[in-house]
Image 1 (cartoon, rainbow, N blue to C red):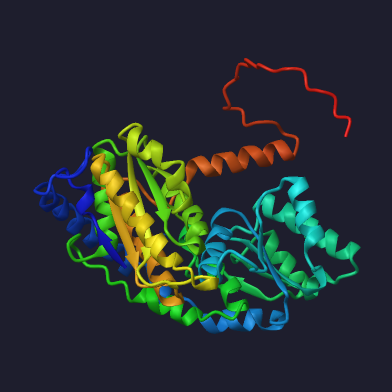
Image 2: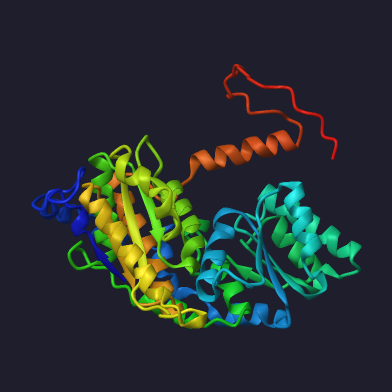
Length: 425
């Protein structure tokens, strides 16, 4: 992982970071790093995420997925951190086309019905993931999966394994039916758990080298200086840019297989840092596609964004027919970077050597470390999510017929609508 913050300095961009301000910022990085290391040694919840490359039990993952090696499709039933990491990792390693790996996270009944109707249920491996074992949407979707399998004459207990905590309804159900169970790492929020069974089970089931993923993550050395540590350079400079007005962070990968990575990053950055009226809003973009649309805003709109340009240095040079598409992607990347620099808009270049198990593992770990460091600088706890938990409780209360929590303020309504045309089709 390589991070270049040159185009985020005030000699190039507005807002930008003065070069001489980096030294003072680096003193804060050193202090934050020392605190992070103390918490890791103490085994403090949350900070254990940084130890997952060494503590994740690969053998347990391999054993749990072994009965499902014949699966034609893999379905992860989970939401948020229970699903985004697995999808980002598998898609990075396989690409976006023809990958029989699916995620059931929304409870939109139309979507759920269509997905389950299209799946070869008798040949599908189902991984139900919930850290608490109580996530309402996940349990509801799992009931829908079981119902669809029963209707198709499929024994769901033979096609399902579970990833969950030590207690909860999901753990009880797994024990009742003798389902294989993988443990979520205790004290690690879902968005930081991609390098555990939560994110690795689907990749293992698809035959990918999860040891290489973890080795790549373990190879990212965290040192107490932003000048020596790429993840800390990224976390520190994005923090400083946010403090100076770049309150949105556009993650823009120039590799189609990394598109779902932007969704994982968006949850990581928003849920971890968005507290106490501070943080930085993550935005998702795709190079080359969105430089033909969103770039207009990034170059000429409000000066409230930093654009993170992410790319693999090595990629296939040619597509079928001998067309040198790799040259086109490289030219598009460089042109976007130059266009934003000319407009004095801050960018940060993040590069990995190639999209491989080892280098994607390093990227995921590096961004987690960057986020934790940024949380230290913002002076927020990156491992809590009180606003999310409030929403979960409110939704569950409504589903159970109890209404919204008592502390919910009474809202007003100002609706504007038009008559809908008659649907004759």
